[in-house]
Image (tube, rainbow, N blue to C red):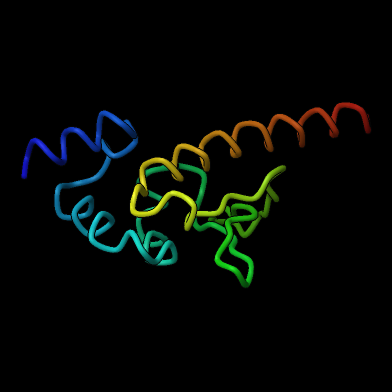
Length: 110
């Protein structure tokens, strides 16, 4: 079991911030991306929760202060089967590119 958790942590290094119990909880609930929500703060410091549309596609993120950033591209967790670590890598990618775009737009507005 420990080897399996270590392999998942190596695939998605932010899992190192989670306890074994939290990681097992995430991996056990891979079919329902909404059940990952309680662990978002532990994986991503600035993300309190993800924003989902009606199809359970991830379309953005929300901070603890309720600030919302919409992603440039939607993420469809169902396309990743039970590989939660793979769609969380996409969340990390969209987090960076979307924040970069927001900052670029803000500088242009100045």
